[in-house]
Image (tube, rainbow, N blue to C red; front, top):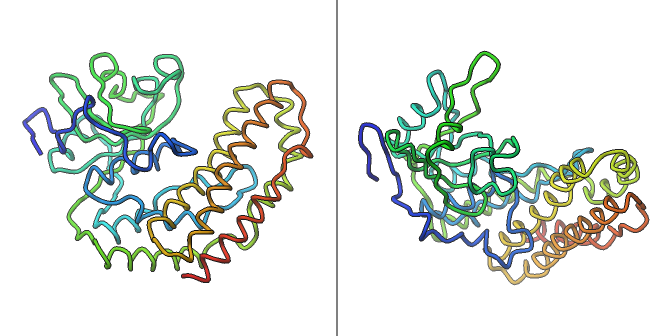
Length: 321
């Protein structure tokens, strides 16, 4: 780690040489999941930890009536496995000053930001205002440069984007939510890491949904389609992100976790989890065609096969654990 009075760089990374990590490999069904999971999928391996070991929580995803659980790495799991204590950063001065202070202590900072100022934000860059989370690991106050993880990689921004991202809140703008990562705990590895991960899996299984969440979504779909029929494509994209994408991405992550455990008994549930990931993507494409044509028909959305896969997964994983 390098630092000065007005700068800090925890890991000394370069945008030009950074390669997306395993959970963002280009051959994945869902290369992106949600902003919080994506940040940790890059940050954990950058800090030397296997992100796959922390994916046991994915067995808990539920249908929440209007969305599938916005799945996130539980902070207590990150501390138990990797010795990382994530705490809210109290913001009372500028976000820039607090971020620099923590980076100078070797602590990554997770900041809720406006993607309007992120050069890697695609169509939203300088055009839309969309909330997202980045993990800052390098900051140069004088040079106005920020190095951060977001989506599927490591990025840098500077100049006007830096000023926009760190502008001080005024009377009509609130401070963002910010977390910092203390790296003082002991990280597990080898058999100890696997054993602790399995203990977390058992705990998460005890809190899994009582019913089949995919069946619950199927029951709600006719009403959801009525709503989609009366809204524009902007609403459809939000619906797609919060339902088929969260469902599919979560179960692809569960498949990755079961692969990491490397047990023959988990090969079939891992395959079933990938079928859910693929099925959710197919449903998203079907919904997109319906939205474009303005013709919605719940009967054409076949969810029963992935409902059955969900039951297979939970039965097999619970028996193993």
